[in-house]
Length: 286
Image (cartoon, rainbow, N blue to C red; front, side, top):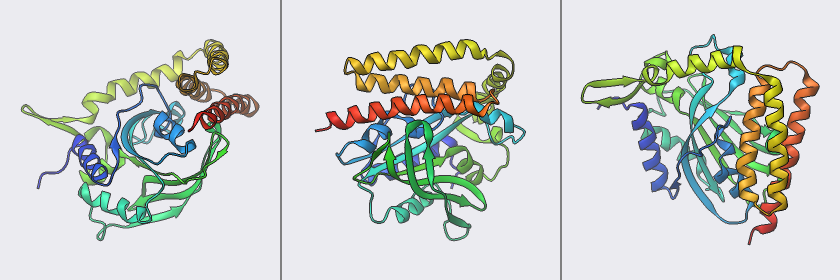
C-alpha cells in the first residue's frame, strides 16, 4: 500500500466525514489564525439549526515566528476542521476511526486525550475538550463549544481540528515539514517545501522587517468602523467577513507589540464586535 500524500490525507478525511453525514465545504477566502474563524463554524455554533460540515483551512499565525527555530512550526499551515451539531454520542469513536481511515494504527500508537479547555478571547468563545496527542505530539484539538460570540450554545456543537502537517509527518514517517510528500505527478513526487518554503521565508521576512504598526493600526480603526456601519445596515454576514480581516490585522500587530495593555485593548475591541455580530445572527435565526 502506497504511503498517502498530503493531498491523499485530505481526500481520505473528506470521504470519511462525508460518509458520516458531513457536507464538504471549501476554505474561507480570508486570512485567519484558526479554522474556527471560518463563517461556517462561527455562524452555525450560534443558530439553532443542525449542522454537519468538514473543510480544509489554511491558517496563518504571525506570532509563531518567535518560535520558528522549530522547523515543523510554520506561520503558515493547514487545518482540517469538522463541526457537528448536535454532537454524535459516539464522536470520540468516530474520531479514532477517522485516524484509521488515513492509515494510522490506533492500537500500535500512543493516543492520549488530554484535558485542555479552549477559549478564543477575540471571538468571545469558550469550550471544553481535549488536545489529542499521537506519540506525544499534539495532532488534534477536540472541543465542545459552550459559548460563541458571548452567546451560550444551547445545542452543543463539537469541533475537531486536525493539524494536517503533523498528521502527515507521522503517516509518512519523516521529521521535517519540508520533506512531506504533498502530491505525486507523472514526473515524480512534489514535496511540501517546494511549494511553501519560499513563501514561509518571505512571510518571516515581512513580519521581522516590513510591518508598519502605525499603518496596521489605521487599518484596524478603519475596518472596526466599517463593521459598525455594516451592522447598522443589517449586513451581518458581511460584517463577519470584515471581523476575520480585523482579527488578522490584530495577529500581525500582536507578532511585534510587547505592551500587554495595548494587546488587551485590541482584543476587547474585536470581542465587542464579535458579540454584536453574534447577537444579530441569533436575532435573525428562524
